[in-house]
Length: 89
Image (cartoon, rainbow, N blue to C red):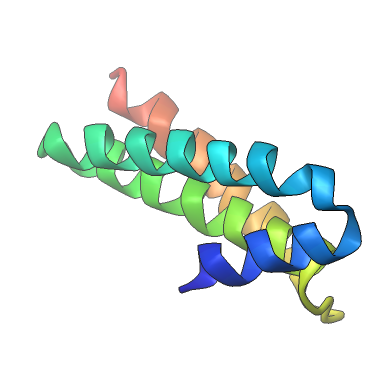
């Protein structure tokens, strides 16, 4: 649902963005599915937080920005990086 709204918003901003944004959503979703398939907690947390971070970025850029989104993007992004790093331990 979020992805559809982000792609629609991107296309409204610039029709040439529809395909690249949709392709990126496919790639990030595949990353999440692969991460979840590992069954490893830190990998699942990292990939999930990464998807949330990018969903917030897309929503902020193409749908409707909110003041709190910049902080939420940074928190979820850094949480993703830390989680993925911990998964290597």
